[in-house]
Image 1: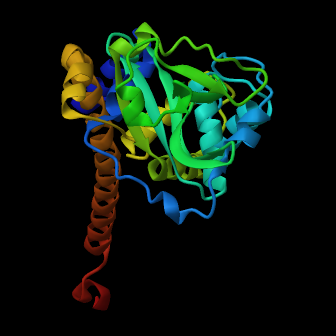
Image 2: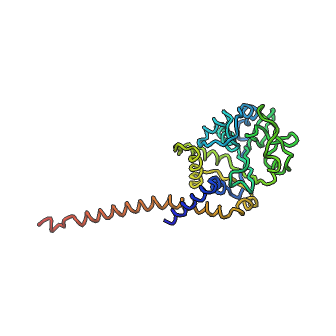
Image 3: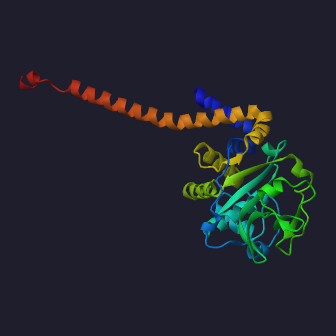
Length: 299
């Protein structure tokens, strides 16, 4: 009963404040992601062709769960915000056995409300040059400095207003809202491509529509966190303290809710099994007690 009360209290808290805060705070971890073996893939991602063919038609958030549907809506139809478009491109890449990482730029003061920007890091081909670096799918180009495309470490060290977009799409220009003062207050978080692929396979295996896409997105993300299927966003220990320190109360509520649900997942089936075993034993004993003894039977 106490565990259920903790879960219900956590649900009420996040619904009343900001549901995305649960996902954000629980997906963070201090640590490093292993560098992919970029040479293992057969060819680089053709950024000029794929990003250049996106028919950009909007940047509003899409409440879609299945990665294949997000790919169709974002890469083929040009809809969706930065997170949607990165997830759509991630699906394209993993379907072609191309390695990638997701790079989140998380503002310390706003990431629990869903503020921030999302990029993808992969090995790509641009103007005939094969390189590893960042692609800004929302802005349709490559974050660059003095015309040179950037990788994560280089963007992290770039002062505000020194980065522009090298466009890969005729519908996009060199302007962006994310490389000015925004860079002053962000933490770089990296999610491993293999974890994202595992998350995609899990979604495809369990997805059932409830008829409400926004509710589905929240519930499936929360379930993935509880079942340890949601991709982890890795940050340095210093940045982890910057993000979690001012939000320790939110972190505690999220942790308590998560571990209470996990405990219930184990305890409820266990208690049900014990109840069934007990009932079977009681019935067996009653059957034995009701059976006539040998003396009674002979009489």
